[in-house]
Amino acid sequence: RLKVLTLQRPQPPLPDLVYCFAPIKQGRLDYLVQKAVEMGAGVLQPVVTQHTQVARLGIERVRANVVEAAEQCGILAVPDVREAEKFERLLAGWDKERRLIFCDEDASTNNPLPALQAVREKKFGLLVGPEGGFSDEERRILRALPFVTAIPLGPRILRADTAAVAALAVIQATIGDW
Image (cartoon, rainbow, N blue to C red; front, top):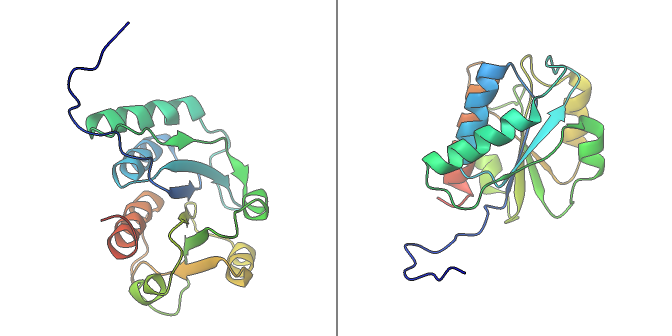
């Protein structure tokens, strides 16, 4: 039997940010996962898109990286890592009350702030595409959904792991918990 003598700090709730990402090559995936945890993702959801190049995702390695990143950053609420889902299934099962923000490399503007400032939902998710981006069909499907907001990430083409960090930073700073 144990007794708590002193509470160093309260247990914070798990962040309510669902981070959806297409699996990428292992070394870059480790980085992507670590940064997502550090930046406040509460759930990590791998998504298989048309251009996803990684056939097999080491889900246990991803979970180990999540725990390690949480420990290094003093995060007490360890994010959940879900099994990979196909793009279509993710969208079909998405909670329509949760805004889904996706990184659109074909956006007509370079500034993500106006689109993010229009988001009123307090619950949201972020969808970052694979190396090579979303297919034209996937972008068309996403843009047609009423619960989806497309954001650009500036004028440069970013690697998938860089795009993930950039998107998480701009979202957290604009509508997140920063």
